[in-house]
Length: 128
Image (spheres, rainbow, N blue to C red):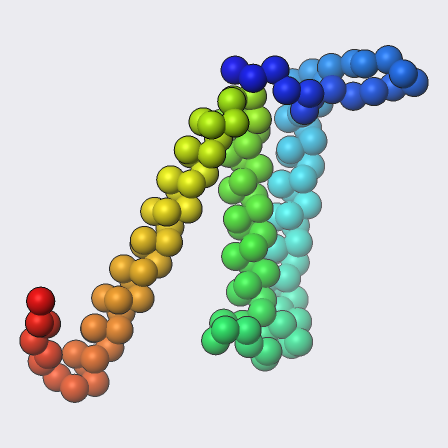
């Protein structure tokens, strides 16, 4: 494991390590704030965010997606202890997940357009 200075706090020139309890409370508060914002937006559903679109998706949905990715990042970073690992391992985990998510999106779009064409035009033979 790498000995990074991520868990250092400097008080009046003295270096003090944060304990695990402080780290957990910090992540808990951050995730709670993000969840409260998501729930509040889901209940209120501001008209500005629900009637405007960005890339054919409501802005409110983009906000939900972004906040969900931020929550997933912090859960991975703290509760899977990725902050304490070496840089190479962190990159391997992140880039593998990014690749698989992009591949999933591609496959969903490809298959979705094929199914749409089948419903629209009837039977379509897929040429390989």
